[in-house]
Image (cartoon, rainbow, N blue to C red; front, side, top):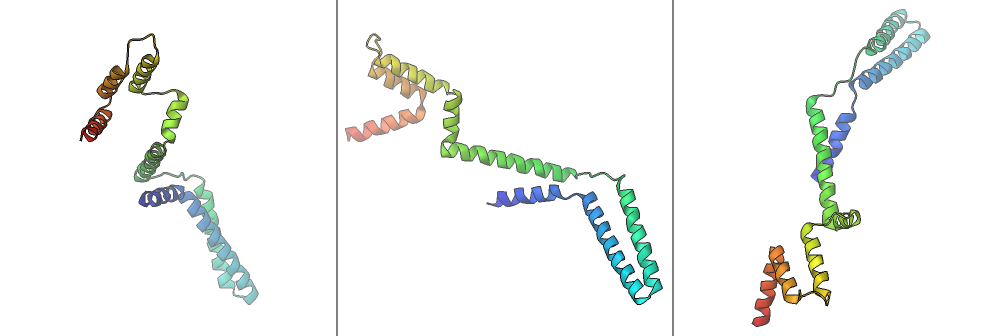
Length: 162
């Protein structure tokens, strides 16, 4: 579950635009200055109106200068984002494989392991009455191809003999 939080944090950090934040802050400053100008006009305070007008003009200047600024994502954030994407991709592959969907996809696209194809061909040959291969040849081939099958076969033989 910790990786989901890390991915969310990376996406949130990569979505933060410094230029956008500066523009929003400048808009907020201009709105506050307009409020001060209005309040100063209502109360007749010329100094408040003068200073608020200057603040509004400075904030307006920020918008003009902002057009020449470009966003630049820090290298560490880019690396963090790519790492988060890689972690999600690996987690997705593991999830697909563990649920059996990965095997179903492999079968659907015809990407079968060579060992399984050889075993299937031997099984077909074994069932063909015109071929000399029998049950013993099939079992011997299966044991030679798959060490886990061989271990399970030996264990089953030991249980049967006991």
